[in-house]
Amino acid sequence: GAGVSQTPSNKVTEKGKYVELRCDPISGHTALYWYRQSLGQGPEFLIYFQGTGAADDSGLPNDRFFAVRPEGSVSTLKIQRTERGDSAVYLCASSPFLTANTDTQYFGPGTRLTVL
Amino acid sequence: KQEVTQIPAALSVPEGENLVLNCSFTDSAIYNLQWFRQDPGKGLTSLLLIQSSQREQTSGRLNASLDKSSGRSTLYIAASQPGDSATYLCAVTGNTGKLIFGQGTTLQVKP
Image 1 (tube, each protein chain N blue to C red):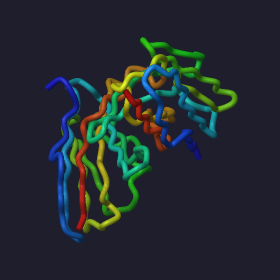
Image 2 (image 1 turned 180 degrees about the vertical axis):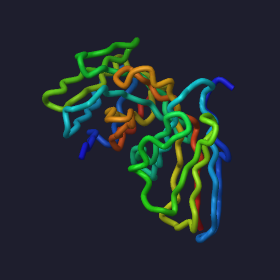
Image 3 (image 1 turned 90 degrees about the vertical axis):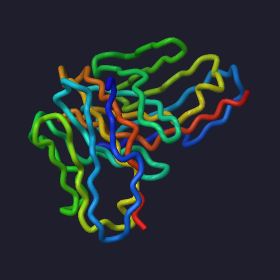
Image 4 (image 1 turned 90 degrees about the horizontal axis):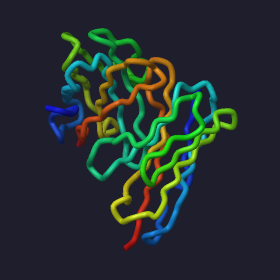
């Protein structure tokens, strides 16, 4: 497709369960970002991939959160032992990362995660 | 630590009015500043990107300014329309290209 896609669009799970959220970036984009947006707030940075490697994971809140991008395209955000406070919209964005000061990130529609 | 603040949190105006949304940031060492639009249940759409060396950018009825030294940006919307109703987010780009967002301004334009 032409844009960033994320699956599932909605995920409801129970406290303590494991979830995986998937992001398909725009073809050819080397940079991929995950953000988390709580209700009424702006998105908060979680992790950034350049190719297959995590270049900056400083935004991951704790070790229950992990993300991979094994082939440099699709990325999966994994959350273990989910807590009610993890409920949010998880946004993925990609960019060609041509230059740091002119780059625009293209966002997917997000996955709304609800932890009961 | 970079912090981005947007004022007001919400704004309601009648159709046709010109309006200004405000954004401030605490660390002037930014690569660029962007304004995004977010519709309910949707992702973000980039409206304007101002490089750190620039003062303003324009696109149609939108004009964004940047005063890096004072840590401020404004988004000016001319002749507002009901279709402009959305949440507007300001974000600065830090190292590694990660975006640091404000909390957003929710705009309602009444017909």
